[in-house]
Length: 94
Image 1 (spheres, rainbow, N blue to C red):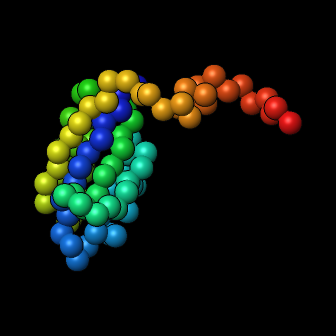
Image 2 (image 1 turned 30 degrees about the horizontal axis):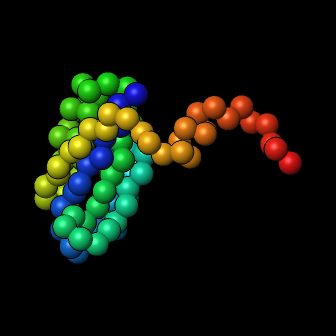
């Protein structure tokens, strides 16, 4: 599984519609609107680097309202929540 974080500059007047269109793309797991240097942050989880090439320029880059993207590929997760859920077999401690 390849995880990528895509920073997206979007047209200000269409951020909600742009975000929803991106969220509807297969391989996009989350989209956040945010303040700061970028308008949207998308988290992608796909099967291969080749799939990233299909999703980012081929789909996200063509969404109306997307002006520019910058992609960061994640190598390793350090989140304790992610680590714990990976080993969760569904047994409650109650």
